[in-house]
Image 1 (cartoon, rainbow, N blue to C red):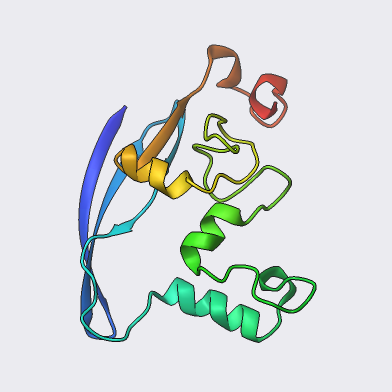
Image 2 (cartoon, rainbow, N blue to C red):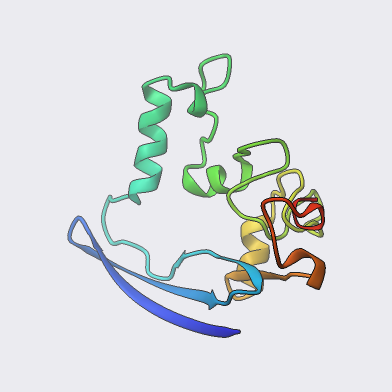
Length: 144
């Protein structure tokens, strides 16, 4: 297992954003990492993910609006990444799932998921059991 830390300077509408990222490079486990802004912009700019989510809700796209027409993710990208489910119990981040944050891979949305990632240095990793490592397309131990 190798852990790389990257510091990225991102220019967004003329404002510099500095992110640090913890990335795992491994063939034996399931990693997740998040980006965490460490500098606040000094003028009225927003991350492009927030703008895209707001645009989706303004266009009334079904993935971004509730049945009553209100925005499904009013908190922007952090709200989306915690509460969006691609299938029941499956979200964009695999770590710290479930109401209490103790589930791995599958589980209901955890309102403290991003906070738990930050407490864990912005990454999460699951080590596969020996029975889960091979033939993932047909391995019951891997797919649960």
